[in-house]
Image 1 (cartoon, rainbow, N blue to C red):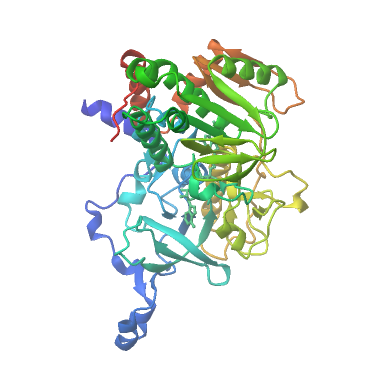
Image 2 (image 1 turned 90 degrees about the vertical axis):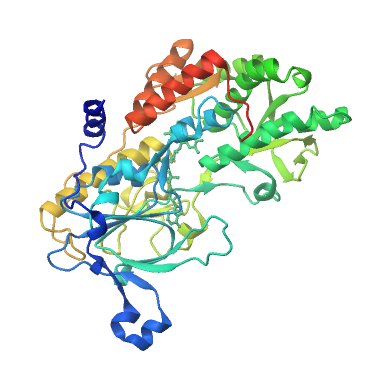
Amino acid sequence: MAWFGRFVQVSNFKNSVLPTRPNHFLAPLSHFVSTAAAAGPALAAAAAEPDLAPTRPGEKPRVVVLGSGWAGCRLMKGLDTEAYDVVCVSPRNHMVFTPLLASTCVGTLEFRSVAEPIGRIQPAISTAPGSYFFLAKCTRVDPDNHSVYCETVTDGMDSLEPWKFKIAYDKLVVALGAEPSTFGIQGVNENAIFLREVHHAQEIRRKLLLNLMLSDVPGISEEEKRRLLHCVVVGGGPTGVEFSGELSDFIMKDVHQRYAHVKDYIRVTLIEANEILSSFDDRLRRYATKQLTKCGVHLVQGVVKDVKSRKIILSDGTEVPYGLLVWSTGVGPSPFVRSLQLPKSPGGRIGVDEWLRVPSVQDIFSIGDCSGFLDSTGKPVLPALAQVAERQGKYLAELLNSVAKAGGGRANSAEEIALGNPFVYKHLGSMATIGSFKALVDLRQSKEGKGLSMAGFTSWFIWRSAYLTRVVSWRNRFYVAINWFTTFVFGRDISRI
Ligand SMILES: Cc1cc2nc3c(=O)[nH]c(=O)nc-3n(C[C@H](O)[C@H](O)[C@H](O)COP(=O)(O)OP(=O)(O)OC[C@H]3O[C@@H](n4cnc5c(N)ncnc54)[C@H](O)[C@@H]3O)c2cc1C
């Protein structure tokens, strides 16, 4: 199988470079200096922030990437690591293949099938002497000194103080993504679960299985049983609809077989303020509404006013008790992005020009959900989609590679370099699965545009095939295919681990 392993590596990582050093532990540590240490032993004792110092002549210029999502990872994959060292800073060491995340909440797919380690996306990060991944979050950007300040993320291990450090960059790419919008509604953060990260999906699966088991305990009242087994999804966009579809599949197939005592109590309610799947064709929306209703999903048009620990309250006063509440009402810029002293696009994202540069500062670029075209470009802010983020990452990698080739890789050296064609986004269409082997495929470029739109089993097949080919590595492609197969043959895994 060795030939196969090599084939897989070559086909996935054709942009990457193999390690130039036989042992990366011999990597020069001169990249790391402490400002305090350089200033003398007395100051070193005071241990100020250690630095990843500015690159020197003879070293490769350094691209620092903030974030390991769709945008940051696609960028890192495409960067020429002969020309640049790559340093990624992110609180997670993997990329999440978000279109398949909803399937992991009910066990259709396993969590690892949708998580792609950074070192597999850009192997230079684990092997090249000057390239690193830091499990940390960025806390400050200092454009004047071409530096970012970071602190390690210790996952709630209270005993570990976060370690603070500073990284000098030649080029900085801000790809920090977005955060769920709560519209300031009280109790959402405390009581609802979002669906953006693998740990959210894990929390949803554990809660769902816990509620199923609790509701079977002797002596539990009818009312409490109904509450525990009421799954409420707020937000009728593609994520909310896909999750509701997955839940209804889980209920119809697995709960009916393996939790037969409580099968008549479990319900799914999808609450949306306007209409579900508003970006899709009218015909497809009607189809989705009919199909979801047929599969037992209760669609409610309403506005959530308040979220308590066991019930939500709608603006018309209706009280909706729940056992599981999943919040999926769209995204907006994170408080950190909002706090950055950089130009902003409408909506508070980091403002970029047509080449995805942040104007008024040198060598800073921004891509993905955290960025948007500035008003002055005359272009609209693009939707928060993986297809936007991925294509921006690819475009920017090519741009930075050509800048390096033209001799502009170092800090403050690219001002005179022609950047070539600006970034142009062409929407390829949208897809969403709605459960029961059905999906929607809308290939129109805009809501008013012409093009193919279809729904049903063929669309579901297209949806699955399209995403299977989009999964980043062959390893995860195998995982996904095998998970789908085992789920089909043996049902979903209901162990609460
Ligand atoms: C469940 C779900 C399903 C989706 N389905 C689809 C779909 O089918 N099609 C589609 O086109 N889009 C889909 N999307 C949207 C798509 O996932 C996003 O548009 C995409 O992830 C944006 O990529 P990004 O790189 O900008 O941000 P993200 O992928 O969110 O990545 C942001 C990164 O920044 C890191 N970060 C955050 N703060 C800091 C900090 N202070 N310092 C350092 N790093 C930080 C995060 O940890 C993360 O690694 C879906 C989203 C979800 C949640």
